[in-house]
Length: 162
Image (cartoon, rainbow, N blue to C red; front, side, top):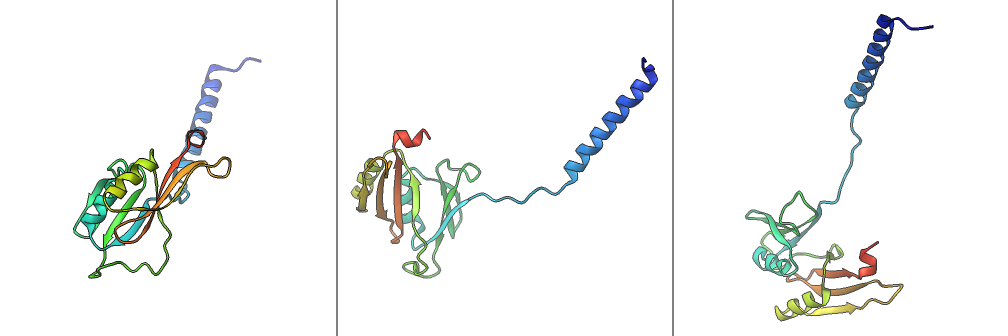
């Protein structure tokens, strides 16, 4: 039995209308909340000194005002995580009694950057060489100008491909 052209057009119209209604219902639904890591904020005694320290490792100024400087690898806040340096209120050194952890920077050559830091007066406190399979990275630890621990993390070529 062959369908009449008017009936076929009507059924196609109904199907299209239902599809639009389903799409509208999906669009009207509340989106699920989500979060992403923006970065780390630390208190520092001297914004300029700390900015120069982190610039040695390739971080560039993405935002600056009289109390804060945000640094990122791209120099833009929208592209990647940021390290936010915040001027301590009237303190010569920030209070680190909360034991925040460390700043971790993924780097292309940890040894070369450790030499650069040493030339600027920041000696490495520990260097870990890759030992397969337990450690697949060169890791250098040092302290920033305000005493925060910094880890320079260089994944090995094998690990970086994963």
